[in-house]
Image (cartoon, rainbow, N blue to C red):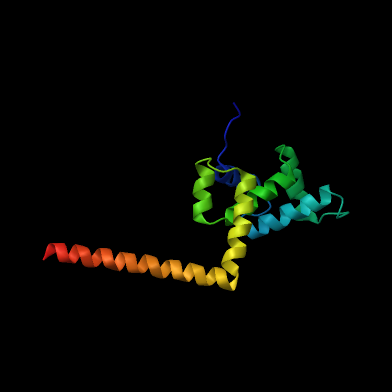
Length: 139
């Protein structure tokens, strides 16, 4: 049986490994550096600047593939409902990426925003009704 890893703990350890090149641990900076390493490995870029080269060397020293690290770093942006499913191992990394893209598409469209606002309104009304019912029980 393969060992199950927690992706978010893995991301923390990768940030520790890459601390020499990005001391602040900024996710956007790290993703940019690792993406350059991925492009270099795929021969889309011929040469790396000094920080990207240090990043590439650190990844190789720890036997990490730049593409895998980049995909993990992308998962940092997933919403809480997908994050919970990932930590509980209910979905795979690929499924999480797919669901995140779908969620992002749906929430960025006009109809998606309208649906989300309507859901929020329904939840607010439910909370209000439950508060009214609890007040009636008290009196």
